[in-house]
Image 1 (cartoon, rainbow, N blue to C red):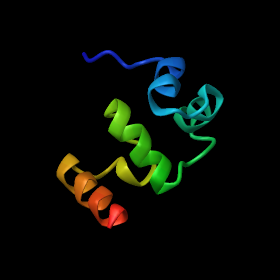
Image 2: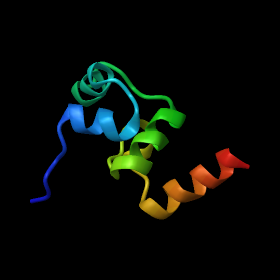
Image 3: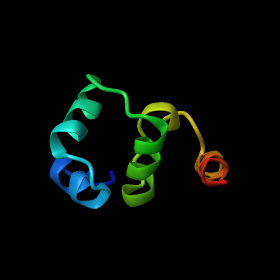
Image 4: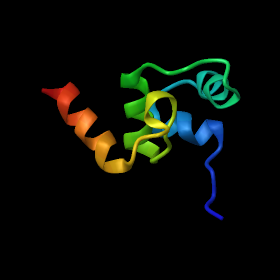
Length: 67
């Protein structure tokens, strides 16, 4: 089983507050697509709209938003 980083570690890596990460993980908040991509790019964890997407599709979305 893969190690799941703590909220504090995800916050440090992604630049998003640990309390907001906690709310996302509990299901109290749904991150914007931009925040979900930010978390994914820095940690590899998928939240919000990215959850059901394969990695290749996530990368396509990221490229489209950057254009």
